[in-house]
Structures are given as C-alpha cells and as structure tokens.
Image (cartoon, rainbow, N blue to C red; front, side, top):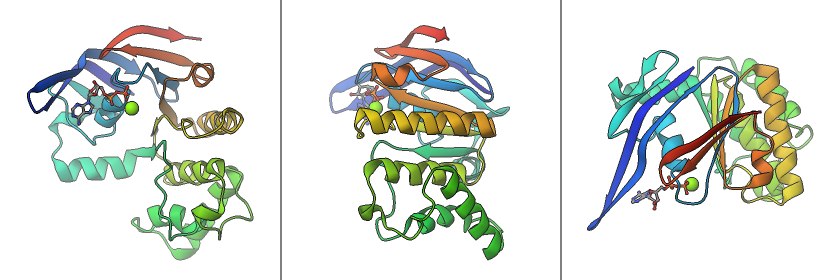
Length: 225
Ligand SMILES: Nc1ncnc2c1ncn2[C@@H]1O[C@H](COP(=O)(O)OP(=O)(O)O)[C@@H](O)[C@H]1O
Ligand SMILES: [Mg+2]
C-alpha cells in the first residue's frame, strides 16, 4: 500500500514561489484503480512524480510497500523504481528506433533473464494489450492508441505492484481513450496491479473506482464508487 502523509512540495522559479502541494494525505490500497483528478496546475503531476520517486517532498512523507521513500538515496530510488513501479505518459515516450517488441523487451534486458524468457514474456504481454502481429512495427507505423498500448505493455512486463499514468489519454480521441482505460482496468483486475492515473477529463474520471480530487495543491474530495 501507499501512505501519503502531509506532503508538501514547493517550487521556486525566479522570484516566484509556488506551493504545488500544500499538505496532501491519502492511503492507497493494493489493487486500487484510482484517479487523481483536477484542473491544470492543481498538482497532479507533482504528486505522481513524488509517488514515482522522480522528485522529493519538501515536507511530509510517502511510504510505499513499507519503504519510506524519503529515506532512500538516489541509487536506492532507482532500484526501487525498477522493481516496484511502471510508468505511462501522455506522450507515450517510446523509443522511436525500436520496434514494439524491442520497446517492451528492453525493460527486461536489465534483469537476469534468459533470451527465451524475455521473448516469451514480451510476446505474452503484447498479446494481452492487443498488439499481436504488430510486434515488429516501429511506433511511427502505429496509431496513438496502439503506441499507448505498447507503453502499457512496457509498464506491466516486469509485473510491478504499482503503475503510475500521467494523463494517459490526453493525446487520444475519446473513443481510443476509452479503449485504453478499459485495457488498463482489465490489467488492474487481472494482475491486481495498483493503477494511479491523473486526468482533468470527466469521461476518464468515470472509469475510476476512486476519485481523489485535487485543487490548488490540496485534496478537496475523496470519493469511492
Ligand atoms: N518545475 C516547476 N517549477 C515551477 N513551478 C512548477 C514546476 N512544476 C510545476 N510547477 C507549478 O506547480 C503547480 C502544480 O503543477 P503540476 O503538478 O504540473 O499540476 P498539474 O499536473 O495538475 O497540471 C502549478 O502551479 C505549476 O505551474
Ligand atoms: Mg500535469
């Protein structure tokens, strides 16, 4: 589980000082399908980056699977991210010169696995996200929705306990966005992976089992459905 306690994050840019998170607390259980919802500038990306060990809190703490992440040094954070977290981005962030297969298998090449095991796991997850037969295409030969499917496969292939997705459907048309959300939910149910995804889109919020609403760096509502 994830325990977020009184988290604050401030940015200083030039003379201005932005309180991006002003004391955020929440407990997130294993296997939740949760949306961090709020308008642009409300602090969604900041919160996801803190949970993702990409950025550090100025006050408060975040504990993930019993590990307080503020106590970890840089190497420990990298290791922790590698073992526990998967990431999905608004702009997919695929490597353009690699095929769908290579974009996913690359992640496994850092682990001590045999080539046949890497191939087997990569093909299995690509099939599960609906990309069977497209393994050898490069991202520019695929649609936005298909590219995001590669990103979902890449996030899941190591079987992380948590997947963080920052506005994963913001670059997709609404029909494709819904397909991506349905796929994420299917994977959430199948693997009991915790999914935390941010959005400012009402349609996307409808898919969440729990809605954590952020406004100006504070949680203003926490709704389970
Ligand atoms: N690197 C940064 N430097 C200065 N201000 C930032 C930085 N990143 C975010 N902010 C500010 O922090 C607030 C929250 O931003 P962000 O977490 O990106 O919100 P959201 O993802 O909900 O749009 C906004 O006011 C934004 O301008
Ligand atoms: Mg953002």
